[in-house]
Amino acid sequence: MLAIFTFVMLGVGFIVYKLILIVPMRELCVIERLGKFNKILTPGLHFLIPFVDRVAYRHETREQCLNIPHQSCISRDNIQIEVDGLLYIKLMDAYKASYGIENFLNAAVNLAQTTVRSEVGKLSLSETFSERERLNETIVGEIDRASEPWGIKVMRYEVMNITPSSNVIDVLEKQMEAERQKRAEITLANADRDSTINLSQGERQEAINISEGERQKRINESNGRAQEISILATATAEGMKAIADAIEKPGGRQAMNVRLVQSYIDRVALLFKRADVSIVPVELAKMQGFFEGIESVSKTINPAQKDQ
Image (cartoon, rainbow, N blue to C red; front, top):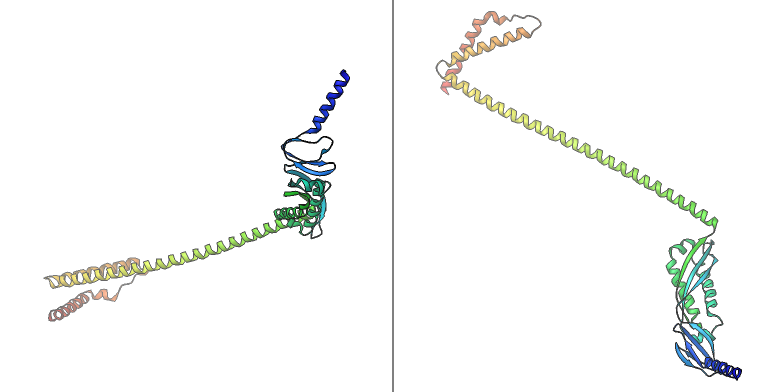
């Protein structure tokens, strides 16, 4: 009896197991009835007909990341490079994913590899590095169109590594070194040119400043001489006027004669003192006649000034 009871309980448990189906939140289940597609079960509790309904496929509904293995590609300029990446896909139609292709994950990986090889062949080596974003967008568009019958959606593709061969890397390093050397020489040449220009401009400005200074100096000196001449002329005129006024006063002529004699004596004494050879002028012997001549001239001038 215990064995029969155990056998009956196992049979009931098996039937309940086949009758009840719990679908997790992250999955979709494709149900076949007698080998033919029946329906797609969403997450939750479902009841099946034992031995008639069965779960044919279980599909992940979350976004999946597929690693695209590195592969050899030939660029447009005939350079061999290794390219790998990541492909992000999401299940959109469980029916197409079940009956449209055998294994959509492997198919997506293989399609990504062939598409990458085709798109890289359209670009040069430098463009594969500089236009990686455009390359990703192009690959996504191509894979998405080709995988539409499979019921999946390509979310994005990211190129991970682009690795040229060792020979190409050596050539690129030499090219970059030459380019850096070229830029350094250009920079030095530009610096020398700028230095020469600055020096010439400085010398030019210095010459201009010196000439301006000399011109202003000459102007100031000429203005000073003009003012000096003007002051001397004014002083001389005032002195002559004062002398004339003094001569008109009583005893003025005698004072003028005395002053002239004193000045003459001083000049002669200075001449004798500075001269290397002693010279005795003839006029010195006729000193009295000289003084009388001066007095006659003064008398002649004074009546003429009175008449005026």
